Amino acid sequence: MADPRRPLPRWRPWHGLTIVLALLAPVLVTAWLGGAESLAAIRRFPPGLLGLMVLVAFTCWNLNAARLRLMLDGRAGWLGQRGALGIELASKFALCATPGGSGGPATLLVLLARRGLPPSRGAAVFLLDQGCDLLFFLCMLTGVVAYSLLGDTAWPHRWLVQLALVALALVAFAACLAMACLPRLLRSPVQPPACWLSGRRRRWLARRLLVCRQAILTTLRLPPTTLLAVLMLTSAHWLLRYSLLYLAVLGVGGSIDWLWIFLTQMLAMAASQFSFLPGGAGAAELGVGGLLLPMLGAEQAAAAVLVWRLASYHLYLAAGAPLFLVQATRWLARSPAD
Image 1: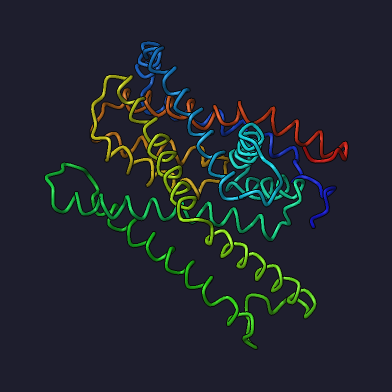
Image 2: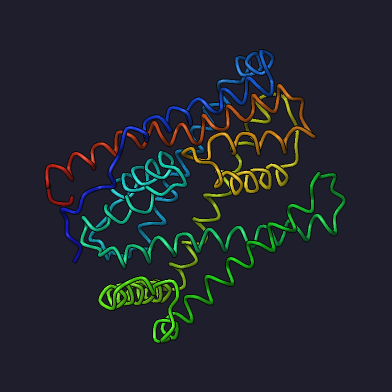
């Protein structure tokens, strides 16, 4: 069992600076793209539509929490919806508040370890979660590419969609192949990635990789109805979350095909992984804004991007920060898990 006193990921002063820059990035990009006209468009944004966006974001959080409960299947003790929502928001806050999202998985593993789930098994839950996301996007991209080839669409940069599908399919194939061949790879006498580790360390790493693989297989042996529910929750989450930008575009007076807005976010969020700021700030706004410009005016695109980020990224930070601080305080106090 994992040590329940293992510390949470450490925070340093430069983390605060990167968060401040991430918070300011949408405003700076909006001012650069749309100027004063975009700020006026934001002031005219319908309050009811903004409230709907917040409600959609809240629903997405609860869908993810329900998915976590199903994947754990009681392996981390009894976990209600409220507790799962706390883990979801705290880990997503760490994801959004660290460059490359590096703090998110670490925080999730630590919070699950407090409930008695070893990190190797917690990593399996995280990888399965990512696998469900990957499967959803692969299916969506396949359908969208078929629609763009067979239907009459006026989307710009359609080659990007096809390139994204190929890249995603390669990632999925490589992940499945690595998982299937893991025991054989670990028995191989030549292991370049781990050659710098001592024999003891290599054995330690091999044991945990095998435990993680076994935990993934155990989760995949859940009842088909449970696995189907996980996939349905995954689909509902992403369909709703990627509708936030569509609502933002409607609020600033634009009219764009929902499928293109879905692709816009997916492509831009993939590109945002190359940003050094938390949450891909800067790159995400520029990517989405650039893909919206052919179909919207500059001031409308800039306003839509700012509202979208406020209702997604910034809202995650605001809702998750108190829960993360509560978890950190409990950790420092060495209190037992709930």
